Length: 321
Image (tube, rainbow, N blue to C red; front, side, top):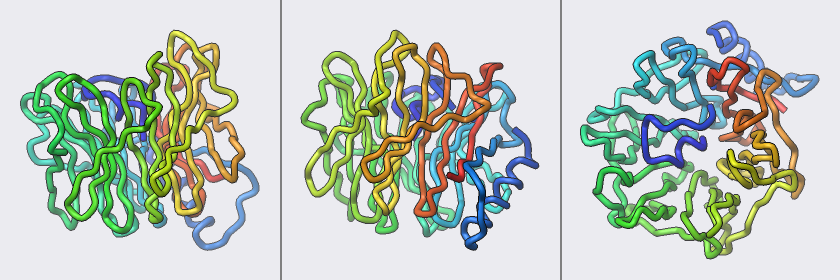
């Protein structure tokens, strides 16, 4: 997840994403973890698509167990593109009909990718990329009215189950689960102004974010029909944002996301066995709506996300705890 993926406009920005050599370094760390090599301490590695504008930047959103990553970048014209990062190679995803841009949000262990594109009317549609074929995903309950957005696909597991969210004709946001061709609406019972489903693991556990009637953000876990609210104990409220947002979950039940503190600073978090651990990229600025967010986690515990640096540029990161 990125907080950007909660916004029905391709030009809207929140947080997000510096050289090719750093991406190669990241792959060395990935190899060490996947082959049992030791890493002494947590390591943040910046990852920036070489096609990205240095200010507009790059955002990493999803990672699978093979270390393949997906996300988005902006070029110098502020056009948004999805990409796949595999073995150090960035591949732009050329989504058909993506006139106003596209981004990738999730990847499973078979390499299936989901994301969202914006057509010639700026209406949003989810997509599934499987073996080179793009399939459009539109929840039947979604509005087709430009300005509200339509359907956004956010996560996929190895069973091919897809989660995301859509907007109705009144502009209300609802999560969805797409399983075996059937769309099921997901609404947290505590939501006052929208539910966003963002990640799903192979046990069918779903995480996401809902906003209460006052506009405060809360993470949620949906497990076997039961919604559990997730609030980082360090979360606060400010004019820049309020609360906790959950975006990714692995098969061990570890959850990642972000929270706002009382000054408006943004920090990532890892929730593991009931314990919240703050994540903060050392290159990030955490003030006045800036900072770090975590978007995805795989079964090896590798975490991806993005941060805003002191120049206001977005950068992706890979974290090896």
